[in-house]
Structure formats: C-alpha cells, structure tokens
Length: 312
Image (cartoon, rainbow, N blue to C red; front, side):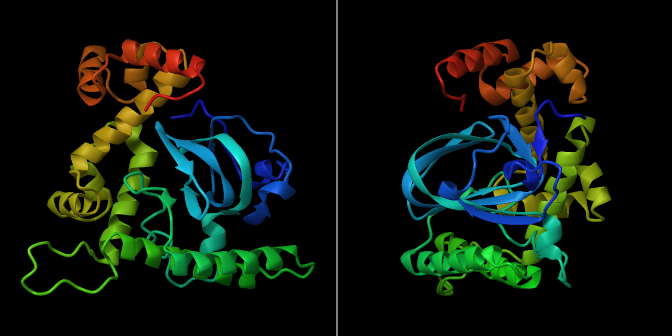
C-alpha cells in the first residue's frame, strides 16, 4: 500500500536530494535546515544526541522530550516529527542498513540491536555516566573521521559498530540483561532472551510492516518465517509482553490512526486499505483499541493539531 507521507533518504536531510548517500554525521549548529515536510518517514536510521538544551520528538502518536545526555533513535518507516527545540546543542548520525552491514559476515547484526526496528522498545535512552562518556568519545571520533578529506568508510563503519554496541550494552544493563545474574532461588526470572529470538521478532516485524494491509494471521507470518505459530507467539510475548496476534492488530490500528489523522479518506476506504472490508467491524475494532470511533478520533486529532500538539 502506498503511504500518504513523504519518505526521505539521507540526501534529503543534507539538502542534496539527488545525491544518495549511506552515512552522514553532523552537529545541529553546522547543518542547514533540511527542506523536508514536518511529518515524514525515513528510509534510514537516525541517532540524535543532545549535549545541551531540550527538544521534543514525536514518533507514531508518542511524544518524547530529549534532554542533555540522551540518545534518541528513529528507524525506517516510523512516522516522525522533530517537533520543537530550545537552544539545542548536539547532532545526528544517519546511516542505512547497507552501510551498517557492509563487510559484515553476520547479516543479522542489525536485527540484534534491541533498540532499533522495535515499536515496543523505548527509542529514548539516557546512558549511565560511564557509557555516556564512551558514546561522546565515539561520536567525537566519528565527527573527526567524517570531516577528513580522506575519510574511510571502513573506519566510520567500525566506529559506528562500536557506538551501537556500547549503547546496546547500556540498554541491556538498564533492562536487567547483561547485569549480574540473579541467585538460583530468585523469585523474579532474568529478562534475558537469546539473540535468535530478537532476530526472529525483528523479521516478523519487518514482514508485518510490508504486509499489514493484507490482514494476515500470525500463522501466515509464522509460515513465511519457517517456524510454528506457537514458537512465534512465545518469542513475541517474551520480547514485547504481547501476543503475536496483538502485535498484528496494533500495527493495523497504528496505520488506521495515521490515515485518519493525516488524510481525508472515508472510514470505509481506510478499512478496505487495511484489508478489513466490513467498515462496521473495523469501527468496532478501532473503538476497542482506542476508546473512540474512527470519526471521533479524526475530530480529536484535528482539534489537538490546531492547538499545536499531537494525539497520544
């Protein structure tokens, strides 16, 4: 299904839309304001770091206030808006999947990063002081390498891998993974899960992003992933706390919210675009999910938009 939102590659954010590139890093004070729509989707990954000031980011009906010492992650396909900022110092790192995987033997390495490509993960991370010092050092090295006239793709990629690995370790410790294991008689189980489970979940989500309009069942996705429906459901529940069916429905309802807020399409047409050709059934599902009818949600979204905010 075509999207009503503009999709930009890295060149658009450098005001070079005809110059495709796989990697860039820039400080906010040194970059021209990009000629892009307020609401948009990326074809690449972006890491925003904040050294001073605050900014407010918006991704798919969720607002985040990014404060000094924070990192914010945007993945391809997410509906994003850089909403407001106040005397912000920091910058952003932009890279494609191809750049990250260049020369990589492990083609699942990107999927093994839990904080990317995961709409159940928190895209806002505030590393502990030790990790923050390390991320700042690596960002400085990336800036220096990128500015060199003889900049090396291999060096920049190695530094990016090190940065993302350090962030993942910080996230693992904060979420109870990677810390000291609990004693054998601990009543609370460890939160760790195998990397293979995270890879399976990410592949499931990638398929879901591609086929949400086909109204496929979790079993159909499991068949495409060459696993049983039971195994897929157990893995998804372990990572997200939701069943595979709930994740499928959440993705459908997310797209419905997008279309209700940012297009004038009739409710019946939105339902049909999402593979739900019974508009009444769609309206019931939507109300169960949001507490509002589709038309009431559209009206509330319009009212909040007029006030300069977004619907959460």
